[in-house]
Image (cartoon, rainbow, N blue to C red; front, top):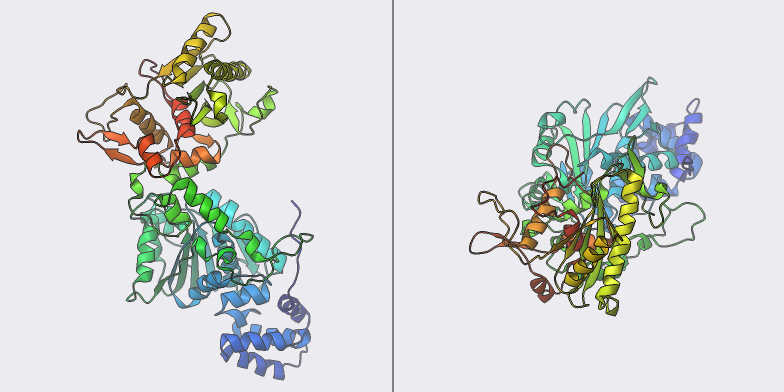
Length: 589
């Protein structure tokens, strides 16, 4: 990747010029102006800075550095001013409220909706804090739920900002170092994550007079780790916690922090929510032109990068007004009763983001040279392959096919309408996927017989019979398993926390258990390489209990009554991972 192009603003250009003019500068007037500006209010100060020509500004910044230890000391109390004047970037009103609260509050909590630039603004706040404090006087610590979020989401913003704006020092993957007055490189900012449950990991950080903690993706921070930040916020320490409200944790650390910020008696804490409805693309707030895109991109409004009403309306339509995802991502609220979903939103999102393993024994599907295998995710050689098919009961709804290879689930087919009325056509499409799966098994060296699980309701019953006959005739060598979801579950443990009432409930709970994060790793046991609609459907049904204490998943009829689609794609996934009791084998090869 090419290095970012350095484009100095007039302020940064003046700051760099001042370095060359340190010797022999006539500084009496500049010293007076610098002293006056440091004492002035922010609006007066910023207006005066803009009125100075580059040469005068260079002299003033030199004097500011003598007094404060940094050329950017004039912006010590105005992060938004630094972002606009020094970095030359555009922000809008809610982002301005967030960053400008940090110098005056020990804790700033920002529950944020989708796409409102929360990580972008957090990265600029790091640049402000690193520049306006002399090296060695402040350390900035950035953290998130997982290290890859720190490394891949927040720190690219920081590296780009430092390099492009010509700020002092240099950045690597998760560190910003800057020379101090003696020429020694000191760490100004760094990123890390603390393992869940390891509260001691948050100790020993406060080694400088000042501290700024940036908690990105704050909704996923464990209570113990979040509470550990309180031990660090002593003396001149600040914290910004920003992220989407968790959709499935009714009493998260982040929710408690936001409630504290709303309490008028907690003067040191403040909550600044930023809902998707606050987006200038929706409010029509006048915002500057975007200057963050690469050169050559046509001039456009900053609002072009922000969510609009089309996104909001589509999201509400797909999930439903009361869905925890909508409450969290659209309204920036903490959902109440979010634990009532069979599968929490964050579990599905984590499975969609789970990294693809690499190394010996792992291969990308598209690299196998097989017709129709275009997916780029990796699979393990020798993996067990299974198919899940949800056949439209009466030609309505959707006919869906999903495949799981080891731990990776992928979408293979969906169709709706009259094309699904003919059970011969449906069975032939399934046969195509069965034969493709057998070719894949051969290429991967898998010796296990492929299991094809088909919902026998409606047309599915006939498709099962035809595929069994075709198997006897040698057209495939897979095991066809008809599943009647209305039957009693295969397994019933009276001592289980969740006892499924019917087989359909059992299938949902089985998939839930595979997606549930392991406390030791923070991830579930599946990688979801599926379409957007399937991900939505997995998080849509509610979970309840009947009079007998059994776990009952919301029916399709109930879901349709509240305006939701039939979860045919999700149930194709359930069938792919589900194994009848007669198959005594682990779910994951």
